[in-house]
Length: 177
Image (tube, rainbow, N blue to C red; front, top):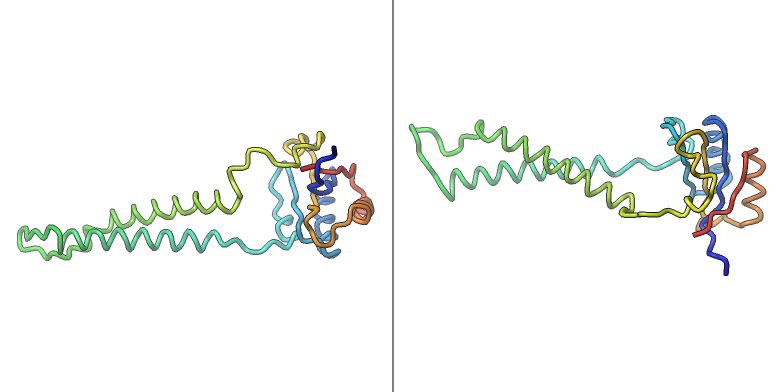
């Protein structure tokens, strides 16, 4: 019994070929596409036309919540819960609150980053279908791969394979789920 198809994978030898292929794939109308590279390629993000990440907004609001929460907690402690008048100083000594407010801002921003990345990346994902292709082990050392998922509305096994072959890849492989 054959496993369901995850998509088609094309293998390229250079980053330039991968970038050119992703641009052509996008112009052809494919949207459920992923690229794998052994090194970071700045142009790849632009050629895939990926939307801007929502991560910075989450981190900003997480840090803001940490800062406001820390400052509010210190205000409540010093003015409501345990008001201490020492040496005639005001109960609202906000300057002394700066270190803890800063630390809670950084802490919550960091925790928000971690939690948001885990959620956005769909982790934990101990195994991905692309590992079913034997040549994919070269993705961490010397080869560049482009995958068109079968869930893409324009995906048709025969036509998509023919289209990928026009991009002059080293090999086109089926990726089983």
